[in-house]
Length: 379
Image (cartoon, rainbow, N blue to C red; front, side, top):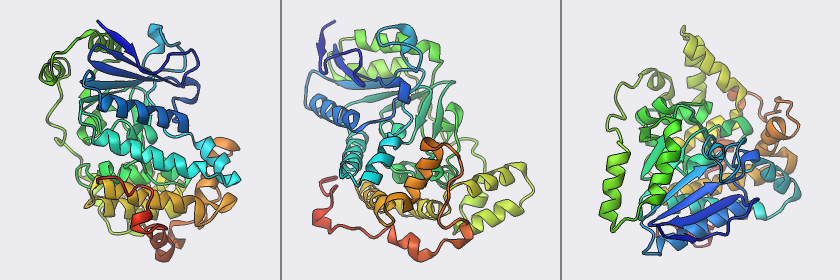
């Protein structure tokens, strides 16, 4: 086995990348932050993947996360937690400081999301443990998405006054029926079986089998992409019945035209599930519930590049339509991750108080097409 180190491995590196034989192996190594993505991690991922895309010696890429207990290089340090999303405390600090680096983060993260979704080589994501927000953005484009009995998957952004970004409009809107609206609005956590059924994962494996699989992949030397595909077929038996047995309850409510109609139907229903779901929605940002519903509906007919451009417009407005502490997103992060009082002061405070005009503003681009920060996507 030949090994070429692409990123120098140091004890405190947040991202470890190494080529083993024919495969580029990436480990997210920020376990104390649940592998939340910093700007430097986004940049390192982007640069590494671009280099490997153009390197004929690299036939595939695999990515995993370390957990909060173990250490890199020891068995207990591998897997256990994939990625909890973007670094929301960084968002908070940068937004309050008016730091333009916040804009850089989203532009570069969405560029990374597009690269992974369109990567020309097999990309294998080991989605063990928490896979949320930005973690979904760096895994949903994978050729093989592996989940385990410990996978906890969600797009929980409406809980912090944000919307399911990182291409969430694209991949959630392509879930069967109106499950995408349900996941986008509630932010509910799903497990491996639901993820496969909803089209957000491909294969479920026991977490105990992952270290041997990872090491086995690293130990292989493939003569061609065909040989690599044969290995994937033999070792990762991807299921084909991902749409089988879907519940219709999601469509009953989340196909309704507006958030107001959805919440009224849920609150008037007799089932425990419906009422619990309504209670969850009442805790989310009323404004961003309306914005997220519109996002998913629009994205259903968009290309990936156009969806990411739309989301870049939207995230700009999250921090700039109302800036500083007036931002819905800043307030949501404050309540959840900074002060931790879990009592966000949403504006407006109720679903029924959100105006269509305020929602519409999120979908007006602040840039001309030729000046858009993601104008290069899809070109």
